[in-house]
Length: 192
Image 1 (cartoon, helix red, strand yellow):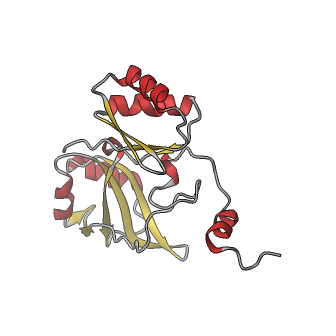
Image 2 (cartoon, helix red, strand yellow):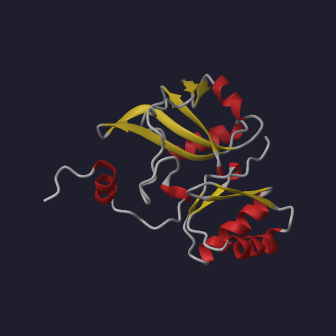
């Protein structure tokens, strides 16, 4: 599986020449590329090592930036249906391991605080991940393994910075108040 290195979006760079020299000294001249937009300076590292070097430097200097989850941290997701809700998680993990799948997380899905015969599973990325959907029997139970349903009608929103297009998991920008953001966007009707 090819590794996708996410871009890093940096705000408030005031001296590009000095900043770029520092980043190039960390990554090497061919280690990254830059792109400027009206809102951000975008850095595209060419490998995971350079990505980590840039992220570490930005954190050390308290820079305002955001990025996205690297492929190396992605998980393969599945849902196992028709498995009794009281099934022990380690039993599921061990049985999946015997079938060649390394589960990093297994969670019973609940609705209105009531457990359902559904288990959400995250697997470490491997070549055989798609084979999990062929499993029809697990722990002596007839099961159906499928992709999780996703309902996302809106773009992702960062609950740290309150901006759209990224999430708070990889955001190091200064936190912003939701009410202040709404006021600036909507000219707050309720101002007194």
